[in-house]
Amino acid sequence: MKGMKCRCGFATISDKALCPRCGKRMKPAEWPDEGTVLSFTRLQAIPEGLPDPYNLALVAVAKGPKLVCWTSGTLHEKDPVTIVEQKGKYLCSLRTDLDFKLDESKLD
Ligand SMILES: [Zn+2]
Image (cartoon, rainbow, N blue to C red; front, side, top):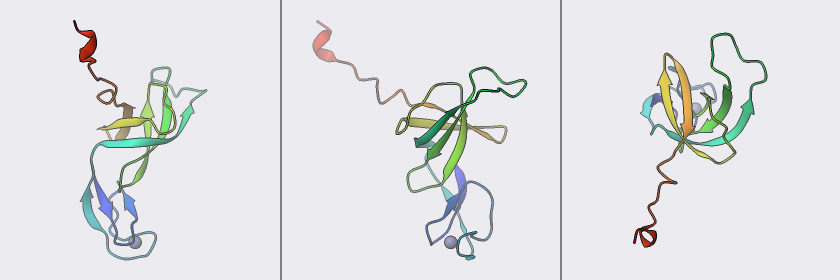
């Protein structure tokens, strides 16, 4: 995931040349496509053309920006998510790789 970051700590996914917080020049940055849910909202009125349910999550990328992501799932605070950009919108879904642990003691 690409964006811009500033020495003052401000980070954004938008293409800003100057930091809105301190006014200094920002540098290109790249972050992993993963984050943690800060808050989650279930939309009551779904915009036309979108599948239902369609919800919004505020996601914090580690050492990176916070972004609003669409999701069709139900998420909770502190859930780990994977972020995908699609046509300029950010979508997120619960990271399943963390939960997928094979319990070898039960294989016999
Ligand atoms: Zn700054």
